[in-house]
Image (cartoon, rainbow, N blue to C red; front, side):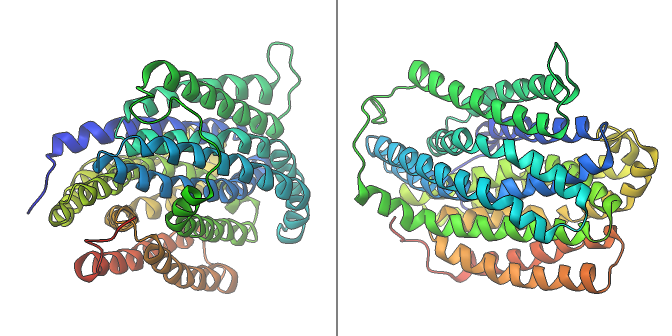
Amino acid sequence: MQTKYTYKQIWLIAYPILISLLMEQMIGMTDTAFLGRVGEVELGASAIAGVFYMVIFMVAFGFSIGAQILIARRNGERQYKEIGDLFYQGIYFQVGMAAVMFLLSYCFSPIILKRIVASEHIYEAATSYLHWRVFGAFFSFSAVMFRAFFLGTTQTKTLTLNSIVMVLSNVVFNYILIFGKFGFPALGIAGAAIGSSLAELVSLLFFILYTRSRIDCRKYGLDRIPKFRLDVLKRMLNVSFWTMIQNFFSLSTWFLFFLYVEHLGERSLAVTNIVRNVSGILFMVLMAFASTCGSLVSNLIGAGHSDCVAGTIRQHVRIAYVFVLPLALLFALFPKLILGIYTDIPDLQDAAVHSLWVMCSTYLFLVPANVYFQAVSGTGNTRTALGMELATLVIYTAYITYIILILQLDVAICWTSEMVYSSFILIFCWLYIKRGNWQGRKI
């Protein structure tokens, strides 16, 4: 097995990403944990509204993935000065897109939710959440460009520091605004949205101050702010556009999953939100290694070591399994322990156990699927990655429509949809890495 990296080197790059992603996941955990003590309606509504916002955010995140691939390639080629141009053009684009997404969501999200949410209580709580949550787009859209810079240049420890600051801010803001502490009114689910948006502002300010004080801005071309360059943005969009579309459709089908489950009842939706948050812990661990794999694949190709890509992917699958599977087994063996973090309602805990077991088992498939998918994106052929994703999502959507809307099976069975998704994406990505023409691709 040819590879340029040892497991120790992979770990040293991945663990700051792991810490940062787990810290970011704690934002969702604290929202759910606090709202789980407000009521089942608020818990379920935060799932619908939260995933709705994530659909918007993941368009920006998709752009940043493309930017990260380009930054990593220039880093591998030692063309450091070009990184600054990529970064600033990305910031310009993200700020403009944040304004557009804010206006669209502010005007149309209440109309959309009214048509697709069955429960009036869920609808009212969800619109209350989204009314305040979309303000965070102005901060989070720019912050992901900093994330792309630090990931692409493998300076990942910064992400850990940022995430700790963001989580602590979110916990403080949520505690004060949800429950009405220190003289503030108790805002409930609206307080959770305001708290999360303020935490994203704190995160962006941290990135700006840290970059100015601790990063060699001259080396990376960050010491001067360039004018808008359409040619650079076009080159970025040539890679990023496909990841933007891929992320939008991927999260849209995830949103569809929650809408379908909402039609099974408020209890089923509350269960799904809890299990989603538990799954998020495992998924963040997985994505730390998958993201590292994508970045290292791009660096390897840029440095002329395409022959080491396949071995590097297999390394990441193994190390991801080592961390994810024991954690999944722990959750499966002690379900009440983990579920108790999110809700103190005994009936709700009991109802979520079977779904939790099914969700944990899906990571046997999700681990290799996500590592291979990020590797395909790392080759720069994001259009092929989009094609694979769309083909898989068609199968996934047909499956959830049949088992949830038509058969109306138990919510635990609904979680087998993750096995269907990951199995097909793994097959497509493995075949591409094995037989596709990606070694000499220029981006």
